[in-house]
Length: 477
Ligand code: URA
Image (tube, rainbow, N blue to C red):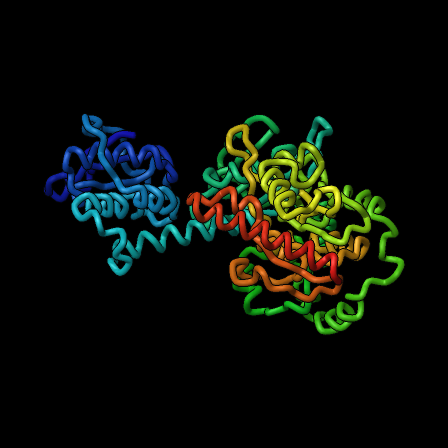
């Protein structure tokens, strides 16, 4: 990036402000480098005009150099960096200047960022919030459609209209999520393309370049209609979560009005159908596990080695339910064989329970993760994913018919009961289940993650105590 004297200021006869030109609308590195140099040279905010080279109002030619990089490292609070890195993606043309003004003030008043009533802090926080929301909306409402390319291969193409400059920053999410697919995301400002190995960019596109209907669209509509829960229908909340402006690019938007209209009748039918019919009940755990291997009820199966089903005696009196398989479980195809599994095995043995006596499973049957370099990092399943997977867990419980079910952590609690709750408050108290007695305890990974050794020892001892109580309950009932 370059700095040049602004011609407009010169024309006014005033001291020319320094014009700083960034390479792109989302040029965080460029802004940071310029800001460090300007701050070290004590150039006040009012003496700078900022703008991006690819913005619509690129009035400035390349010009004078920025001050040299500072000799000593400037210390900037981490909170500022986190906030600025997000807020810089906002579409407000003033954001570069506002961020520099905030940086200037923070270096002169280090406590400023905790003053959320300060108008500048507030404004930048709201900008970051709007950007985060836009990022979330893109992740939630972007829909790929399959097309056939000239070489006969298939490619997935999506059209999206973000409010802020988030496409480049958000591309990594789609690479991790859809690593095996070849896809393009077209937006008015910038398009990004993934060929399975590298991410490339091209200029913005116009809407007609993205394909309309296809078989995928039909499949998506069928999925949406299947997960639409009329009993939970709150039209106001739904419109707030899924603003109307996104509807035009969503295949399922066509279904919203008819689904709302038919919600009442469907709710009655759902209640009627909530008791599984005999023919819906698989006859054995092996048959159920086989069926679950082909599960496509949610997208979590993508990028995993497969479904990790429960294991243990089909008539176990005690069942343990965890959250979801981790990296090692996904590779091995078995639950609780990684670090959390080692903690669980130790706790079981201290509670006098043989692992071979219990049926061990998870609320969610596929590993949810994000790529960090070459590592797959665990991500918590969300409520919709847990609820989708209850289809399998309910049937597993129905077949094993355990006397006691230990729910290890909040995901297991939701998977088994459909409810949320604080584990610390619920543990130690039996919960009535349709099948047997439920007991809530800490998840072994929680014990592993506790940074304070004394707290970890306490949680581990409580886990052992809860397992002992569950074993007694299973023996008695
Ligand atoms: N954590 C779980 O909840 N389940 C596993 O199988 C492994 C780790």
